[in-house]
Image (cartoon, rainbow, N blue to C red; front, side, top):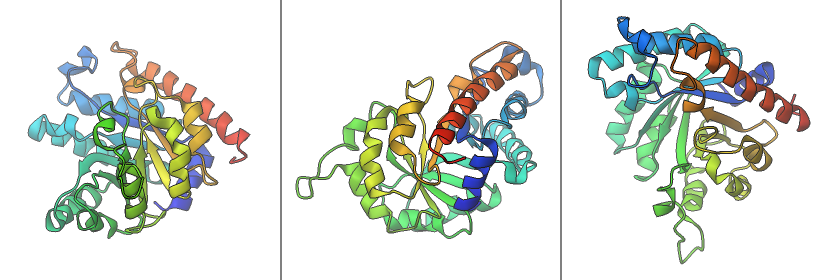
Length: 277
């Protein structure tokens, strides 16, 4: 999916919401555990309930890989089901990969070719040769970790380089934007760091940002939009627990739909007020 197509999808659905499929088998409603594949059953109902209000889905690989072959089967079924919606959604493998070049090449093939995701999250620590293999797939995306929403982000990401005066995450942005372009690279910037988005936009004004941390982690959608919007929206805002685990009862899908719709309506107002739709 191209950058222009993502923006068209945003305008069509009046939304820039991503639903994170962090489908922890220990948290899904207990009545589903009687089924052959409870995680896929859960994902399917969540997708069916939220598809009208979201532009993207982001399975977090840890919740599938931790269950071995059964988990991988759940993931494959989920991807196959998402594929049935074709151009209606954008898919992100939340895998946070990054290794030496030949290993990254295999990770890239696995997620962007074999599984067929539109994008994959990648860690930048090992440098350009660990990221470039992911950039060799037409209309596929690298989502590079820049400034994350967890408390530990301050351990390293905001350290200042005494020579340049720049924080580490700023160095990551400045250097990595030369590896690809706004047409094949996005960046992860946590919603809990919304006030830093203004400075980030000075470095990467055109790139899309994947923004986790809305909802359960306390991030403000209004603040994210205030500092992060660009002329093509430029934001994909993720909510996971705040949607998929809002209810643990049999009404979980209906409740998830309600939460997704609330966010979509808020996003619609933001898009309208900024003359993007």
